[in-house]
Image (cartoon, rainbow, N blue to C red; front, top):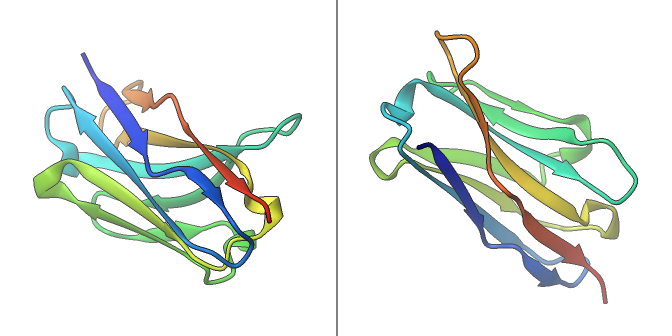
Length: 119
């Protein structure tokens, strides 16, 4: 059974930093999954934050503006999202997503971790 477990969320002041982690288990070859972070704020649609392919190619949403960094450690089956210069509008539930790069339909989600940005 595939599990993606996010951690690292919490309350941070504007301008602060958080590092989110997503640990995958039961996923087989983690390295052949594209991993991504999405977020969903109240009453808004879920949106892509950042994605890292199996080959290491990285894509960021426009609102990231150099503040976030996605990375992966295939040896630990873990993907990270370092978030700096956080703004109140970054507050959301952040979800981890894994998509098999070669087999369609193998798409998994974590349950999310809450990020609150407030003074």
